[in-house]
Length: 326
Image (cartoon, rainbow, N blue to C red; front, side, top):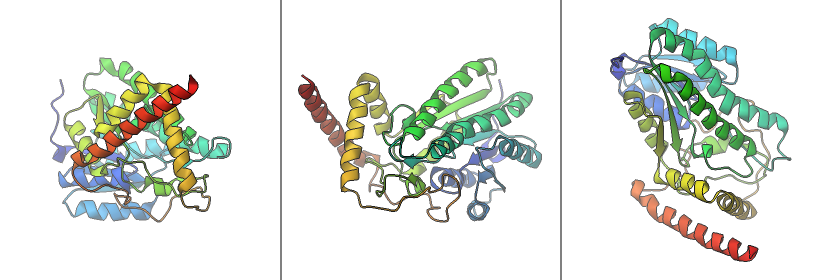
């Protein structure tokens, strides 16, 4: 059994490191003096987060990388290995979102969402696993989100990528049972207060906002640190994540219809906005912070009233739909 090194001696690769949960994770690991390899598409934004992490005394290497490019991910692995002589933790985090009716959203957009969200994670694991096997240890952390269990109407490409991620990761875990010191750890956060939704491709023509309860991405970053220290196959961040998973597992049709109903109600009232590809194909210069400004004040317990309200609304809507069907 491998004796795990302290974080101060570990090399951590983080994709999507310039905003949201990735930026929060970079700072959490930097505060623990880990050796960081930070990857994202925008080199200027990478330089900014590098400077912040170095203020904690962490050593940092930045590697501009498009995770949807398998050769770029091999180059990222090689850069990390050349820099520190190995990789201890690989965090698959980079992701994009596009919202719109499935048949209105261009197929090129659906394809790019899947290339980034699904193939990007596969590219990362495919590149680093030979290194992990050669050194006999390593941890892959996949930020999947509750979207791996809960379908998102008007985000069909995103849902395809997240459901695919969960299946791929489960298959990979099965393959690696003969490698006891190589771990695959999946994280399933509920809706997060990140700029990601501001970056989204928008083919609805409406301002997008996450549905409450919205959680602090720092909680996800802290979970990444915890899993890096003590690997766990599946971790749920936020009580809403488990409740939504359970709801879809028990009432899949009702939960999906209820989600679509709530989204349609929101879109009817939402302010109009120009259609945009967002960051689907190219980087953007806005929204590079950890938070997106959608958060709710207070500690995690403050979300309970929103969760209780959502459950009550869901039960009422479910009863209405059932009675209507009868």
